[in-house]
Image (cartoon, rainbow, N blue to C red; front, side, top):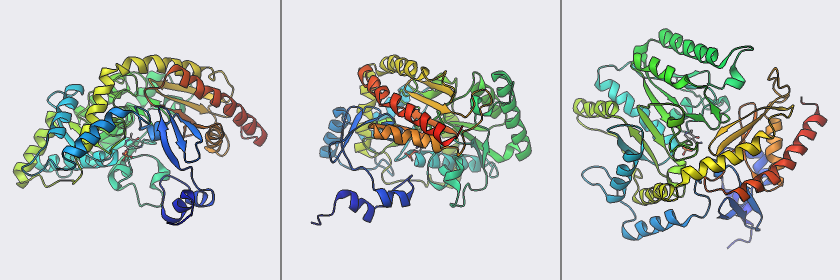
Length: 460
Ligand code: PMP
C-alpha cells in the first residue's frame, strides 16, 4: 500500500464537487474521519463544530445509532431488492405508509428516488407524462425562483436559479423560467411595504403566465424557505397568493422540502409555516439524516391520477431506477422519522431555534449587518455595506467567504451562500444549548476579525 497521505491521494484521484478545483489541488482538503453529535473530527483529531449539518443534511447529528442499526439489520436480512415490476418489499411499504401519514397532502402516493436532484428531476418527468396523457403536450415549462437550489442534474439544475451553477454547462434548458425570489430584504424597492412587494411579485407571475401562455406552463417549484439562497422567508401571504394564481392557470405547485422537510423550520414541513398546500413534495437529506442516500416524491391524487392516465394511454409506466426505494435506505429513513417523533424533536427544535435566533439577533444592530433571518434551526446573517440602502459590499461574496474561512480557523463550519454576503447556520436538529454556546464562542471572534478585515480592505 502506498504511503502517500489520504489528503494527497484525494488530490490525485478525486474530482471533488462544489469547489474551486485549483484551490483544492493547491491546498488539499480536511479528511473527515468520524463524527460526534454536532462535531466532526478529521484524521488528525481536529474537531469542527459543523453548524451546516454537512450541507443541511445530517439532521440527527453525526453519530446517531438508530438509523445505522436499522440499516445494518436490513443489510443482514435483505440488502437489496427493488419495488418495481411485480415485486415490492416491506421497508418501502412501511416508509411510504409513514410518510403518507405525515404529509399535508390527502390521498398521497410516494415514489422513491436516491437524491434530491433525482426526485425533482423525476417529478418533472411525471408531470410531463401526465400532461401528455391529458392531451396537453405543450404544457411543459417550469417556473422557479432566482437563487433557488433544486439540484445538479440537467433538469434540477435548470430549475435552480443560481447563475454560477448554469455558467459553462449550457443551462438552464429552454422552458425553465425564473421569477424574482421572495426575498424582501434584498429585492424590495425603496419604500415598498411587504404587502406591496407581494403584490408586485404576484403581478410578475401573472404577467409571465400571460406572456408565455398558461397552456405552456406545467409547474412551479419552490423551497418553502430558501436554503442556498440565504434562508429566504417569503413575506406573509405570498404563497397563498401565488398558489391561487397557479391553480387558476392549471399549474401544479411543487414544494421542494429537501432542506425544510422533517423539522428544520420548527414544523415538520416548511410548507406548514408558509401556508403552502402543495400538489407534490420532494424530500431528501434529513429524510434519512443523510446516513444512506434516499429521496422521495410525494404526490397528491391529481398528479397520481394523471400518471395512471398516462399508463393507460402509453400502455406502461416506463420509468425506473435501480436504487429507488432501496431497502437499506428505507429502513434508515423510517427509523429517522420514528426518532424525530419519539424524541419530540419538533419541540426541541423550536426551543433551540429560539435560543440560536436570540444569539444571532445580537448582530442585528451592527452597521454592516443588513438582516438576520430564520426559523427553527435555519438562520442567516447577511452583511451589507450600508444598512439603509442595502448596498452590497464590494467584491460581493468575498466577505461572506472570509467570514466562513475565519470561522473554520476557529473550528466552526457554516455555509457561505452564493447570494450577496450571507452565511447560514443550520446545525443538526439535536443541538443543545451548550453546543449553541460553543457555536457563538467561535463565531463571535471570527465575525469580529472579519469586520476588521472588511474595514481594512475598504469593502464597505
Ligand atoms: N433541493 C434543495 C432545496 C437542495 O438544497 C438540494 C441540495 N442542496 C437539492 C434539492 C438537491 O439534492 P441532492 O444534492 O441530494 O441532489
